Image (cartoon, rainbow, N blue to C red):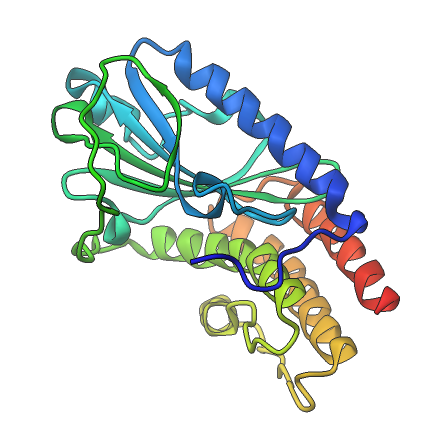
Length: 267
C-alpha cells in the first residue's frame, strides 16, 4: 500500500540523508560479514515508496551455522554501522525460527529507526515488493508477500521488563512524530501505558497526558514534549536499577523534536 501523506518537507531532508548514509554503512557491514548470506529492504523503502521519514526495515539472512551467535541480543553485528541508542529483541514478531530487533541509531538530526528481521539461510525466501541489497547464495524468490503469525513471547525478569519498557518508550517517540507529520489527524501517541508502568515500578508519580483538542498541532507537540520530559526524569531511576540507557538518548530525541517543532511552527 502506498504511503498516505508522504513527507517531503525540506526540514526533514537532512534526516533522510543521514538515514541513507546509515543504510549504506549497514549494507557494507553486512555484505562484508562472512556469516551473512543476503539482505533486503522491506516496507516502504523496499517497495520504492519511502519518504523522508521512512524507517529502515531490513531482512538479514544468516548462514545456519552462525545464526545463534548473530541473533544473540548482545551481538553487535550491526552496531559498528553507527551509534546505537537501543537494541530490543522482540521475539513475538520474528519470522518462524528467526529473530527480530527494534534498533534506534543516533544521528545529528535525531534517532533513526531500524527494524531488523533475521532468519537462517536454509529456509529463507526472497518475497515480492522488496529491494535486494545483496544475495550471495542466489536464494529462491516468491511473488508472494511473506507473513507469519505472532510467536510466543519470553518471560522477562524485572530488569528485562524495565529495559524493554524504557526502550519501547524511546522507540515510540520518533515513530509517533513520523506518523503525525504524515497525517496530523492520526491519533497516534507515544507509549504512555509503558511510561506509566515505569513510573509505578520506580515509585515516581506519573504525569497526566492530556489530549484535549487532539487535532491541534500545538497540543500534540506539547504532549510529546511532556512525554520526553517525563522519560528524561526517569533515566536516573532506570540506571540505578541497572537499565542500560546511553547518555545520548534524550539529546538525540530532543534534536529530532526540534525539527518537528519547526515543522509545526511552519504550518
